[in-house]
Image (cartoon, rainbow, N blue to C red):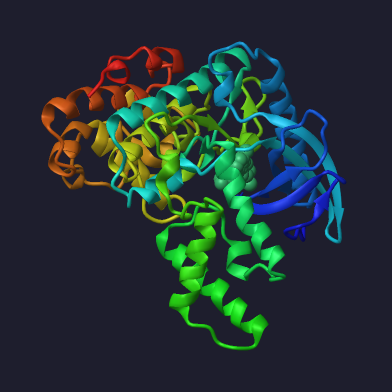
Length: 414
Ligand code: ADP
Ligand code: MG
């Protein structure tokens, strides 16, 4: 749907800035112009118009309605991004479903980028993962919903309203100057990293020069821009002010979620966060989300993905993924290798087909942390223990969200 900054949608939502996008949608920061009980700032998710996307959007709305109404007093309620309003938009491309949601800041992926992929402090990881687990207890135990796409991009960080205002201030300044927004500014999201931030400044300058029809020295321009930013109390776009010790997160994107008793698809989850039972085609339920939490916990702590299988073609990506899981867990119990519609494609007699055992290098999490990431063993042992309970190969034995929340590692303090 062609949306422009400054557009007013539904006679109510003024489009201020692009917040992000996914497979199904683009999400915009909007200002609510009415005094109608809806918050001043919202994130407006505008779904693609094709019929297939419309059906998915309707499911997402149903799921969001349920999570909104089921039990607002539950401890996990505030860790799910809630829907505010929903309506339809008509464009040249067709009908689009729009969902306004409470406004959030950057995602955990931005946080990882911001850490230069070195990971974040373990107390921060504990705080974040505890909140993710509370959100999942609510989704699983109360709403009977499986999220199916837990990953850093879909966990959003809360920012305060002043931060939102400062982002908008810049857009409004453009309008004041009578300048069009530079293309890259419109196309990127708000939480760009340092390099892209510099690119952005250069873009703003070239736009400025273009519209004035004369050149302007970059240093001088940068000085003025800095002044302007200071006046508007605008943080640098890469400012880590949202990385506070009091970080609060919410689970977003119910676009792929399903009910425990009503699945939409047999293949779920983003590759790197996909649970063993899903790879094997052995059916799935809430434990699949917990596996993803395990992968994400490792990634937050180290800055690197726990499993990143090579290739995206089947069966080779699955086979590589299974090898990586085997190496990390030190093997997979034979009864697990016999379950699932894909199991026989990859395993025979409990062993990976076509893979020489000698080529598998068992490398348990504890040792990876010590050898590769230089953790102290006393730190690595409890952390690895926690992780292994989340990526337990048997979904029936895997920690549930509420058991994980009580675990020793999560309640330790460094
Ligand atoms: P999709 O289903 O298309 O993946 P998402 O719901 O994940 O869509 O939204 C895409 C991106 O938009 C997210 O990764 C995030 O960066 C941003 N986003 C989504 N919801 C919000 C929100 N409530 N507040 C701020 N940003 C959001
Ligand atoms: Mg998404």
